[in-house]
Structure formats: C-alpha cells, structure tokens
Image (tube, rainbow, N blue to C red; front, side, top):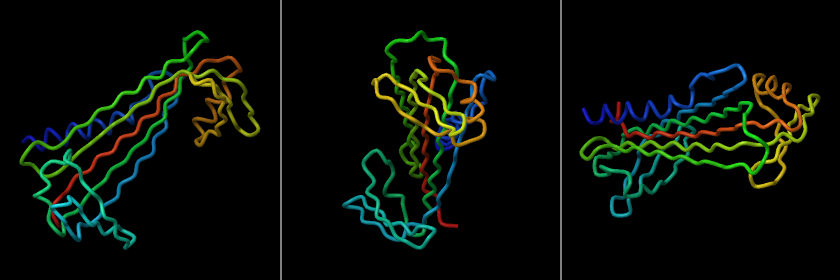
Length: 188
C-alpha cells in the first residue's frame, strides 16, 4: 500500500508538468520521454548497477543512499525512467525592476521495504523583460534577473504565437519544470 501511495505521489509530480494554462495569455509546452533498461549486473558493496539500454549499450550507474531498498534489485529487473519537462510563459503584472528567481524542489522515494523508486521535480520561476521580438526569425530577446540578455527561438507553434503578441518592455513570467521518476520493476 505504501508503494501505491509513493507511485501516486510520483505520478502527481509528473502530472503537475502538464497542467492546462489558466488563461489564454499563458502558454505551456511539455516534452515527455520514457526509457526502460534491464539490470544486467549488480555490485552491492559499491552500490553499482549495470544497465543494458534499449540501443544495446551498457551503462554503470552508482545509486546513492537516497535510493532505498537497494538489496531488492535483481539481475533481469527493469529500470524505468520517466522524464518530463515543461515551459510555461505568461504576461506578467510585475513592474519593471530586478527580477526574483524562485526555485522549488520536491523529492519522493520509496518507503522502506518496497521496490526501489524515486522521483524528483524542480521548478524555476522568474520574470523577464522583453527587449526585442523578431517575428521573421522568429526570435525573442529578453533580460532576466541576472541582467544578461538572452535570445531564444520558440520551438512550438503555440510559443511562436505567444511571441508574436510580445512588445519590447513587456514583462513575462517564465517557469521551467523538470520531473523525473525512476522505478525498479520485476523482470517480466
């Protein structure tokens, strides 16, 4: 039952990256990937696990003490890694000035005695000032709280449409969220 609660928490952390925008002035884009590798070797004293990746390559991974229940990992088990990232942008009501960056992090791990699993989410939120918009590029140049100008090219049609609405001097709230969940599942 505790594993179910942990997996629900992990699923909730991943789902948070896909929340629908609350207003048309906000755009959210997401990208999700999943990789399944097979455990083909274990070195318990070093907490090393050798993984056979889908492309046939092998990778050795050291699992620190935050990965509980290491002793339950067996050769043949599957290691499932789910990764999701999201970018949300919205016109801000902030007044021009020094921007604050807020970083939030959450970590969940399997309860003692359950199959190994861990999930983490990091969100970085800041307000940027739009310096220039080149609709033919299309590129957007902005300055963040560090005072350094950056130029980006929107990667999706939704982001390009949002960029076309921007004017120099606009303030935009930007949130970048990354979530990863890893679980060790018995061999099929």
